[in-house]
Image (cartoon, rainbow, N blue to C red; front, side, top):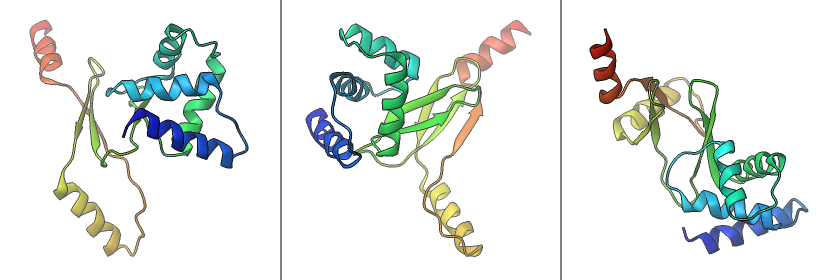
Length: 150
């Protein structure tokens, strides 16, 4: 999705919440759309500061929460206490593998895993509306470094 389209949708979302589009909110959304990587709130704060935005740290955190609420961004815990964000509007669902050594995030999609989750939900008469799958472990580079230091 183009950044202009995301901005337009975000403005509508904000108006429906009786909020206005401010320059810091605009800068935060645009910064999120410029990256195709997962990012932290602190990284976002740094990015908007580089844009000459006068966004306070609290504004960044509140705006990220609004963007998650409006389904512009997804957030997930990296398994070590840090919240990661990624823009999802216009993207298909995927899952994540996170390296506990270097914190690298690998995205993947498995039709088989999706099918199994739906089957298990159906077997339990459970209406599945959302799921998050996060696999934690070590990437090849970190496994090599661990074996060399042992």
